[in-house]
Length: 348
Image (cartoon, rainbow, N blue to C red):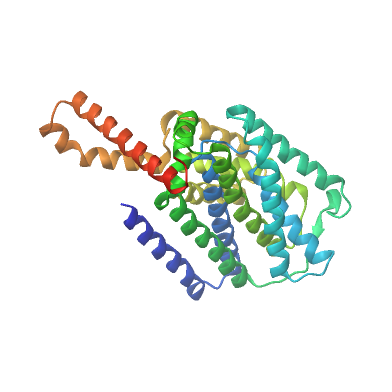
């Protein structure tokens, strides 16, 4: 199953890469570029929310930090875009480390509230500082090349997806994060360091987000606190992840495509009803939690596995005994793999 997913992912990236050869309309390329950006924001949000179990309502703050750092270095210091983007990634890393140490010691709603307050604090800081342009925002030097930003966004998001796929689905790091999500105290008793792992996940989620923010700033050429530091960035990423399926990487991609498509159509025909859009977003979250607790991709995956196991259920031992054996086997495998991971890390 995993090999099929990675094969299909490579094919999708290749197809997207040749789209500009057949589509020359700048508006279509702009829509595709923004859709790719939201896929990146959704999968990076899922690192902490889906695999670690921590809802980060300050995810959009790192998007704004990357955007503003890139803009400041280009406008105030006259740096070229590449160096400014690298500076944005570096500042995002530092901010993620500084924010992660205190906030990741909290759990549940306390962590969510802390990250939300952090996002508001950064937004207010951008509003009062002169170097950020205050409420008037900043205007970057224009570079009108839709193909450049399309391929740049595609390259960054595709690289992020494959890196996260390796770390979270193939490497021991993902298994450790899942152990924290399921039982943090139990993971600690096996020799893992939850605080260190959560900070690593926090930085892994924040840095690509900051890079996307920097690309967005240069692409749009104008940023302000309302467009790059608002709660809408985190809220939409959350909706995409919950709707598509948390903790799967494929789920956020599906959720991002569907939610962004709906958003584009809505703003094209119902742009006067902004409040209605927010109401619909909230309703999607509520309905997804109630009727699709595992998201679209999680539900499809569970149904497929259920059909595949139908014959075994009919011909095998009684369901209760089979379920108990399966649970015991899964627990044994998880414990053995975690012990193996901790031993490789030097923990006895």
